[in-house]
Image 1 (cartoon, rainbow, N blue to C red):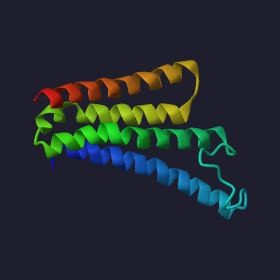
Image 2: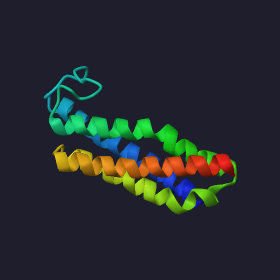
Image 3: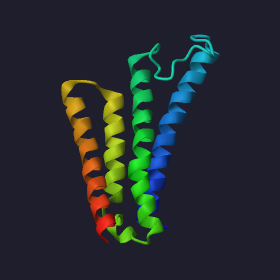
Image 4: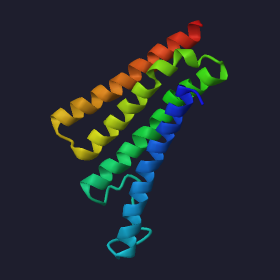
Length: 135
């Protein structure tokens, strides 16, 4: 499997891990009768700040997947993974770092760090786009 496909699988696995964590916590809350099974808001708006950040971190992954994952798939389908392999793990780690920071804090410094991690992903995506379109 190419580095690009491994990183894409990692991106999907990270998104899934955030979802599984959220659903495990929600299941515990229902089982302990802290909330009714039908009492959840999609953004966890009626839950703790951590649960709200977790929902948003997961949503960020899902929102980014068509762009970042799409470019990776284009590279694979066009047999151009040589253009994406070198930065694919950088993109994956930037995504994980963004999510972890999101889960930990909403301080001004944390938000700036989170944006920096996202900016790295955007820069990589723009670079890949240009490379793939001009190949």
